Length: 378
Image 1 (cartoon, rainbow, N blue to C red):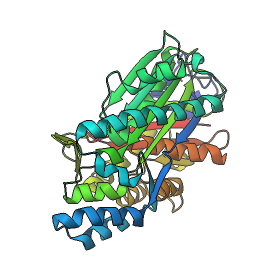
Image 2 (image 1 turned 45 degrees about the vertical axis):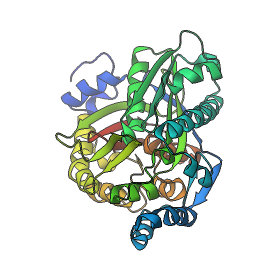
Image 3 (image 1 turned 180 degrees about the horizontal axis):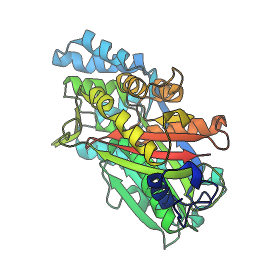
Image 4 (image 1 turned 180 degrees about the vertical axis):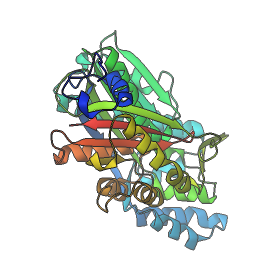
């Protein structure tokens, strides 16, 4: 039997030598970081998919775009409607990147404040209790960043640490969870919050009639989520994390930065890339910790779209209802990029379906192209 400083004797007989070495990096079941709460915030403006199709039809008919194709693509993404940062009719007045990004800064700060306050209230903490704020986004630019603006809004203490992260896209909800847990393993007595704000509607290139942009205009929505995590406490624990980068896949997903702002890069091969890699990633991650897929009770998966979710289901051989919450979130609010996986986790926590001893895998993929995995234990 291998002796390790951080693994209880009762656990040791069930784990391999390699698994023990890996497990010892993540605490002994007492000090692993704890998710105290996850809160969601949506803008007040909502439009169902048919209302949005009508708005796009009116605009893109002037460009001689195949309108039947527009409607087919928008209805195929499995989204019933989306919340928007602004009323639908206001977007036509935003004629420059400067105007759209200015609107993004205001809306992101307002929505971010709401999400953080809700998460802190649910965790029974005050803004002054926070030691670190992590902020992720891929839909707007601000310097000082949104987390700095919230230091003033929320009244965070002068010693607050800030980590703004841009560019991870859909991956960032899972990656932010992992990086926040890394921090709290080093500072067990601290409290931290992860804030994800994505206002995808304010990135839309209205003159771009490429298939990628048309699909994105039907799939992505606006929203924010905040997760409070502590080094100690009650709640699901972050047992382990893993990252996986796929070589030479930069053009699978991302942005091209053009005069008008953010032009979407969205390859039709995304589901194929997911299917080709996710099984090996998940099985390797779980094996490292003496586990396999049969031990996982809860799959918390980013809502990448119908084809992406089906790729997860197929590659991982999941039962029909395993990704039910991901499908529900996609249908109700669309793909919220980094915030989506946190919406799915919030739904699971609110349901109280997870029981003590249950294991879950939280995972997302995004620009790079890459994956992030988080092992949770209730």
